[in-house]
Length: 180
Image (cartoon, rainbow, N blue to C red; front, side, top):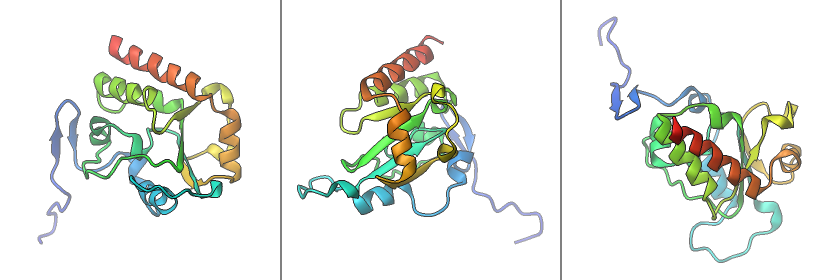
């Protein structure tokens, strides 16, 4: 290799999304095991019929984007994730998204509208919305995935909208993106 030679991966043109050679800053700053690995450790795999005790579930909270297992393919690609990771949610996971993620544009309006519609219509893994109105809660400064029963998970359960209200808000935001 010569001095000054660029060793970065080549840029890829993502149709409708622009050029990319790496994940978004949200995903790039992650450390430790991937979210899907945590869910697999404590959750059921598709087809399992064995019951798990209530203490064996994971609470997933994302502050600026949709949780990895719930992303549509176009949304994941817009974030720079083209690995084809299994995005099937598991029964042992509870998902929470901060309202900020509805306003951080990933891809174009169609990508955002489709992603928010997918969250609104999700029956297998209901997603609850943490509204701006909940205020600043110190334990929710950043995204996390941790076992149910921990303090941050309990805080989420208290301040997040219920599932029907969350679905309604995801649907309203999707309609706003479609009307732009």
